[in-house]
Length: 366
Image (cartoon, rainbow, N blue to C red; front, side, top):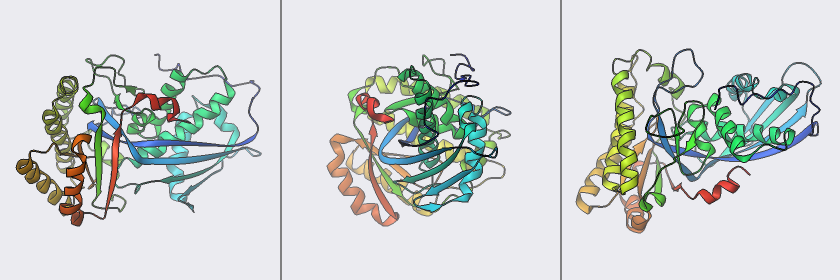
């Protein structure tokens, strides 16, 4: 797909939508198995390595976009998060609208009120920017669908992913349920840097029903946002080795997903999580997102796994909070252990799961 194929010339076109309207979209957060960390210089949200994630149930953003025909030339945006106006969110959204205006020129003719809420803490390392920016991108595409009735579902989703990427890199993966790939990888057909795609290869049944229990160790917004962390990869002394390692791990994961080896899967995602945080800790300036209780949870999980032979493994995104992944067949005993042995280390537990059923794609963005 060519880079400019998402551009549509609306100049002198007669709108087929009312001058005022309301659109609502829901988008789920995702948890990366192979982590994306680092962007190309002088390019907008282009990753330096491919990544793959699961979209998550029960962890999502709902966005209500109110559009009103502009009477003046200046763009007006108001943002409400969980019922409270958030002027601090406006600069990022304005930047997003500026980036997508070439591909969605119709947005220049409207003012917007954005009402949004999460089912989880924002800016705490659970990909709130992924779910929020993808939900907003889906709302924008629903406006475009009103303008172009002939828009096909495949194009709708690809362009939504393309737009979401311009707001938050990992947001492009939240457009789809299931395993989703973003970033060009020579072993994955159709993978590219401009938008995400559903994972196209065989997946063993054990990986179609995975539980994800999220431990909220710290529910405060991160002091250092991911966007700043990505920039520190530009001069990182270990960056090249990290990108090479990520691509090799993707090759390993393709094989693991096919054969159904959960132990290999778990060890790989833990290695990826710790590698991500190793890069964060060795940046210049260096910093640390893990909290003492993050480490307490990790060590307790390791001890429990060794003693019980249970298939429970952790991963982390860019934050202190922990995702525990395990097969649904072991849910009863593992969940009981989590509440008895790990609850004291965290402020909240979110019982979630990895969305895999592609039938829900039909209703994913409605």
